Image (cartoon, rainbow, N blue to C red; front, side, top):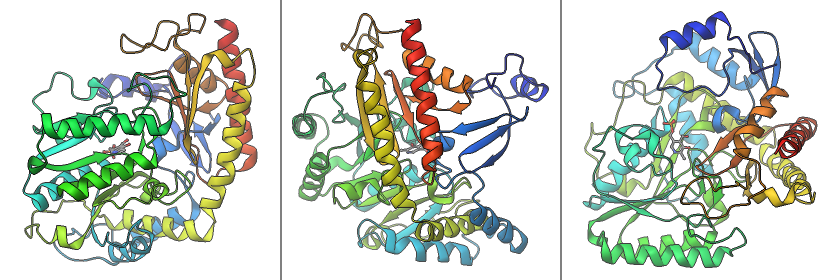
Length: 450
Ligand SMILES: Cc1ncc(COP(=O)(O)O)c(C=O)c1O
């Protein structure tokens, strides 16, 4: 069993000396990863439907990516970006330029983490507009540094007890039926219209356009519940931003790099970002993030205002170059779209089962960024009115645990009963089917137990 009842010596040492602030879904040591599988210290293989939270998009230890990183290690590991240029940095930008969702995105800065990318995006927006306020989305997650925490609205745990955060942040509902207090059958246009009305109100009641630097949004709400924003909502935001001179920051940290079946999730709407943040899948596991904007905006930054000791590390950049090449050579996007249909078919067949149907509130997502939401007997909190009295308690957590016991890693997300599917983008038909079968059995067992 993967949920090791007696943690190994290594785990016990970690439990003693690693901060309590860090939680672990599985108290076991992972020693190896290959493709869609990881191996535990006890030799057990587990099918990985988490991809390290959407990072190892090309599977664990992708041979070309690992080789590129290893070769770079033997050449030079660290060229501090303010001291000199290095080739993998430029080679990576050469690969990224043609992938951008809009040709206006032509000025790049590379950093280490998603949170840092968000901090930089805010800095660029404030510098470019000379304004301060940021409108963030309810349920949005952007990281754990102080600026990123201030715009994170998915759970209070990230910033509870450590206030004050960065001031000047206002919150807008995301077009997610839960947040709008409407059932899951509500149309995308109704949700979009509601949230755009709220934006218009916000701009006359709370943050005047001339004080508003940016609207920040994940095109697919990640930690908030895996909810794709309707294209009409994103287009509505674009219109407001154009009219009022507000920057539209699109956070593609989790949804980018093929996760939704297009290179970037914003492409599903055709909306042009002013500023875009990327990380996670960019280097398939090596720490690397990026902030992209128009040159005209970033030219307003003072020389020296951007930088960082490890920013755009040479080994991470070399890995990212290999990732970009593999995307092209290995038809990754095609695989995402075919596997996505299979995944939705498997989840919809669960909903077609009369024994399970009452407990499945929603199946949603794009590409291989997919979620299933279960019902709760009491609601997940006072904010949740969509209860089903006969539903099993804490269904998402229990199903995820049951999957773990059956040899598959899978994650919950949000304050609701949601399980998210984030398999490797190049997962095989067989492994996807295997994961769906494990999931089906887990759901059936939890429903039977009640
Ligand atoms: C959409 C989004 N933005 C930003 C972040 C923060 O990234 P990091 O954990 O690399 O700081 C995350 C991390 O999950 C994310 O999903």
